[in-house]
Image (cartoon, rainbow, N blue to C red; front, side):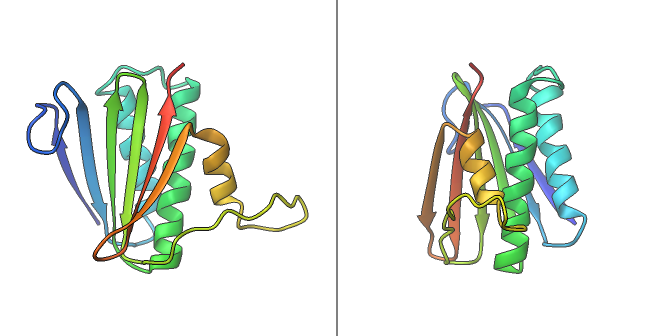
Length: 144
């Protein structure tokens, strides 16, 4: 189950002229696919990105990995915010776990646990902040 919040007016905490959309997911099995579709719709339908572009592919994969990790390790709801910026797209995922993610060294023999490696390889900026309840991960993807 998800709840979607959208705003293109630059109001509230939004930067003037920014396009923003957000959704909340309860941690159910359909949430990962819902989040990926939500990100695709935000980019393609609302911001005119080419669905076959590298930006759309990168954002889809980053959203999948971050939401999967939120469900897997925080065992509960997560929130997804997407914002179009002048230089690209900013993706923020909040979850209820205070444990910070740690990137592991590349190991082609390891099965699984490559999600953060993938995210770091695809993004231009990565930040994690602890919140009063949980943490917030923010990733920036440029459209260069």
